Length: 261
Image 1 (cartoon, rainbow, N blue to C red):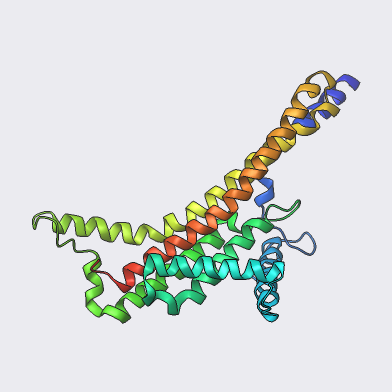
Image 2 (cartoon, rainbow, N blue to C red; image 1 turned 60 degrees about the horizontal axis):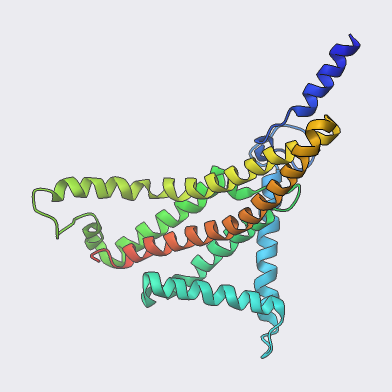
């Protein structure tokens, strides 16, 4: 019996669940999650909004000639996204810059805050990214019809293609257009979830030395090195995914403003 108990303890020591970090739980108490339950997702989304607002408010409050660090970061974000909007979607898209800037800052802070120990990465959930993607999809679609009327349908009609192929290409373009919010949301959620799951897997092997000294002497240092390398990669991925989400928004906005191009 003692041997079985020790074996059970050892097997429990090796058990890890890398996907448990994505479970939505009530922030207060342990009850079921209802429609209006304040969850861990809600908490980290509120924290994301507060952090983004703090950066932009504090960064623009002083407006000194010699900028502080916070002001420099805020100005860098502003200039980076403004240039992106202007280069990708043309100057006609600048009136929509505040919306795109808000998307970028929200996704960026969500990704970075999710790297904190014990944090919840809100952008790893398809429910969050799908809402963001649908907002972009509906916005650019409505804008396309408001700006161009029925001419917006020219986005799906490839006039440069042979006449016989145009109906087929039009059908393909329509399907690809309505798939946009799916790919837009899954790309962000999938990348954030995969990276954090891999981190959790390597983190589970880090305390191996406390279970088996012989194996742990080799496995534990390698696990720690792998965690450091993957964490550095995740910092880069957090920025890249915010950038990709934003630049795709600019591309969709360009299609809405210039459907014939």
